[in-house]
Length: 182
Image 1: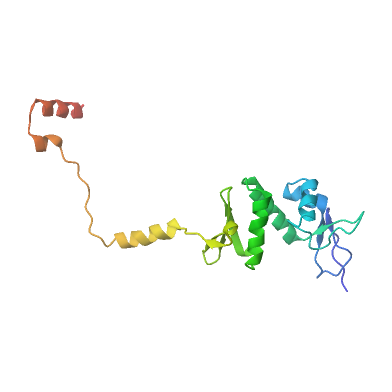
Image 2 (image 1 turned 90 degrees about the horizontal axis):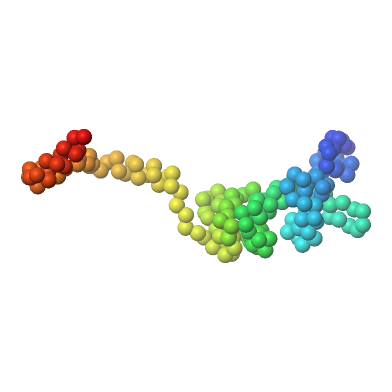
């Protein structure tokens, strides 16, 4: 049975075979995610993002986070940065779970009030409204489509009509022509 390679700083392997999951300690995880250790601890205790390699089990034990946990933590941090509350973030992530979607299956977008998930089928879902579909228009394909359709239409160039050609050649027209010539 081959042992895991030497762990890097902040990484912990439990001296398991290479095919076992690696775990990362809380202080290193909080640093890489850009949150305080206190936030990380709170999020773990409340179940927002629980460590999947090893949970804390009593005094002196350390939580170990997988790479996937770190990705989830960074997503939470980025959503917080958009102005969302933890309550809305939690509800969004729970809705993704209810739908059986992984974070790697969607692109998340937020306007600071809600969270949208865009999947591979280009469906846009409002996660805070239980996955309700949202109407979206991708402009690049629309512009390309219209260029093709418009190219077969007859077209004309716009030409400016001189005002004095329509109204005659009165004193006002001579003044306006002189002003345009300058």
